[in-house]
Image (cartoon, rainbow over all chains, first blue to last red; front, side, top):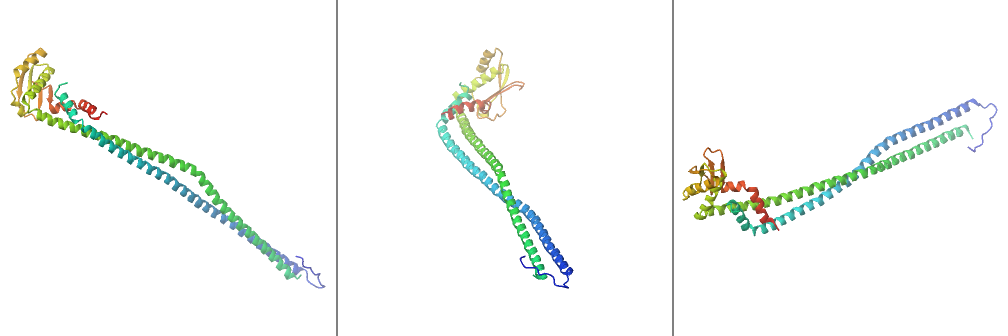
Length: 121
Length: 209
């Protein structure tokens, strides 16, 4: 406020202007108080929103981590399934080999069985 | 400066201050929300280690379960196959035994041996012999068999052939007269009573490298 304040002229009223100034000051204070109240509300709302945002961000991050965890499990399961299939396939091959070798000795086995049953041993 | 000007300035200043207060509040509000998001992410990431560790443990358990089941299945497949092969051998042996019963002399020799063996095990005495329909027609020398058993047991032995329509491919059942003790030397009976031993011996031949 660099403007010059003019001196009062003779007969000029002083109370009314002062009252006006006081009233204006009060109005200014109300404006600031309102602003402070609004600011307080903004912060309170922000805190509520922050809590919601916290929950959302937490859940989103946890979901991503859970997805990652699920992928780890799925991948390990997929690998294990493949290994299991290989075990079964190897067993099938082993069984073929087993039968092939056994088929060459069946006569010998029957002979042995007969000798036991007929008490030749 | 007029009074009105002064009042306007006061109100304008107040409005500016109010505006600043609101601006600052908005800025703080944004910061609060932003910080909250950051905190949430940081907190969630702290959980990550635990969750991933748990997932790895679960994955390991699943893997072990799948592989154990496969190994158990594999073992059973081999046991099943071996059992099938042994059963095939048993069936073929039965066919051979059936054929063998047609070779009268050799079969009678075995049958006599089985009767002597059973009679001796029963300790001689009055014994009953059960044969199938076909074997009832065989000219077994019962007197000779009685004598051999008597010599072995030191007890007078009498064999009586009983026709009870025995259902068997061959062999004999010998029992005491009071039927309290029965020796089942039919081929099926012998296979059944020697099953474990037969399986073991046949496995040695069939499945040894």
